[in-house]
Amino acid sequence: MYNYGKRHEGLLFMSGKRRRKARQKAKRIKCMKSGKNVPFVLANSTRKYPGIKDRYCYQSNIHNLIYKEAAFQNVKYQNSIITKCNFRKAKLAGVDFCHSNLKGCNFEGAILNNVVFMNCNLKNTKWNGAKLQNVYFISTNVSVCNDLAMTETTYILRTYPSNPEIRGQQDIFCKLASHNAFYKYHVLHVTKEKPNYWIIKILFDCYGIDLWRALYALTKRSDKRGFYTLYSYKKFVEKYLKIC
Image (cartoon, rainbow, N blue to C red; front, side, top):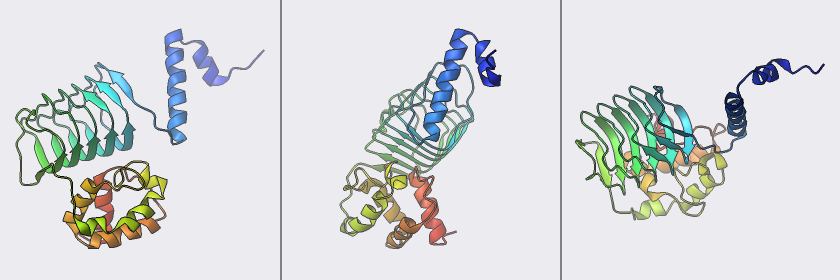
């Protein structure tokens, strides 16, 4: 008689729907472990989710999910749909939302630190009581937000940077782009030939010409994991330059 083993035995006694979901989950985990981008798709769940950490989320499609009091750290959402999600009293530290639709999301009472909204749809988002520190709205219309209170460390960027000091450092960005661990997540790069001057200008304004020394050192770094967000680069630069 064929020995199915524990895994096969478990699948045997599952319903068809549960068995299909288990196979899909196993396939998803296998793809993620191999380094492939696997979109997260979920809508209208009644479960309360705790948030995520150190993740690159490409083409996520989530709707009406509960992230109340959740924690997010070093997470990038790229080309994603994140509509009517509940982020009330959540803590977002080092989260980049890029080219994403956040229509109808609720950020009331949330704490946002080192968060980027680049080319995002924030129509009908709720912000009453939200605390913002080092939050950047890049090519993003904030007039459609409800009860958004700007602070001294909230920045609205509309004009594309043209600083010659930045544009003169093409060699460093080419070196960084040669490492897929940096280029894959498109934080400092649009293409391998075109740097993301929005993000680089933010870093340059924070650290000045010392930034180039730190980024050059980054090309020599053996551990190149986890550089998903502006926040992750800030952390490295500050550690390298010994900024407390």
